[in-house]
Length: 152
Image (cartoon, rainbow, N blue to C red):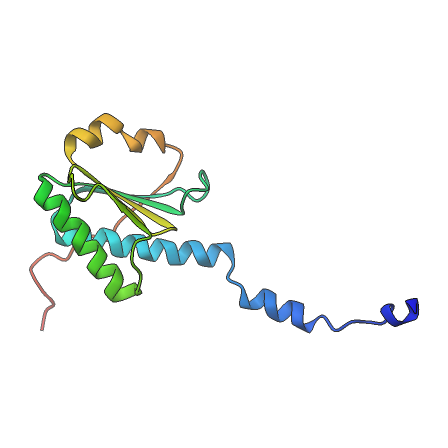
């Protein structure tokens, strides 16, 4: 009976499965693109001090944090809604959780691999998340187009 198990088993199924799975680098790249989309949506609503941190190497919570400042409760809600709309439109994703939208001084949107913090200046200064995640890589954002449109 032991002779039955000593043969060469085809390992194609294992290699096919491995190639079908995304590598951690590919998943982080997708998360990075999502974080950039979020930052662009926030910029469209005039969010201030937008910061994208790659926290994948220093935390298990998420791959990226996107932090920004809103200067009124109404602006913070508008930024949050713009992010939700753009991500749903371009990525077909909705946040797993949203906290603080009714209060409006700090909204947290959890997309799983990307966590968004939209804060009033006072909250951002007090909690100082940038200092807490000082070891995370800062991602530079593309500059917004100047001049109001594409040349013809």
